[in-house]
Length: 168
Image (cartoon, rainbow, N blue to C red; front, side):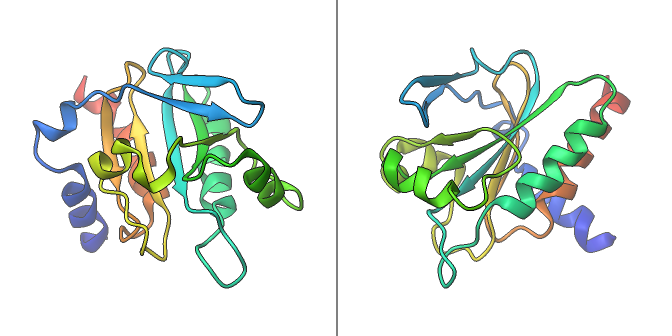
């Protein structure tokens, strides 16, 4: 428990970093756009960033996306959204990854993949054997950004959402 709490506080960074607002645009699988913060629908949104996955390569986002979707589904307020952002902008390639087992939440593509400036801004690590994630407040500000080296990102995201009530 102590290790988890220290990881949570380390992931939050300095107070000034926690006030960053994310303004970006992802591409939907149909070729449309998803704008942040405009399209967040007033919800806290967990974004799972994933490299194109394979059996022997980077991990698939399904487990983390499902854990977060399950948490969001248990929220009586309906105030949490979840999405997977694949760090690739080749629609055919991403649709191929999803053919056998689509995640339980919407999937977006990050234009430019690892070269997108957002990737460096959030500290996303391509070499990470775990997934990178971020939790956005309803206004698009970044509540927490977790690199792929963080332990149990789903717990950190859940803690931030649950703890917000005690800090109001």
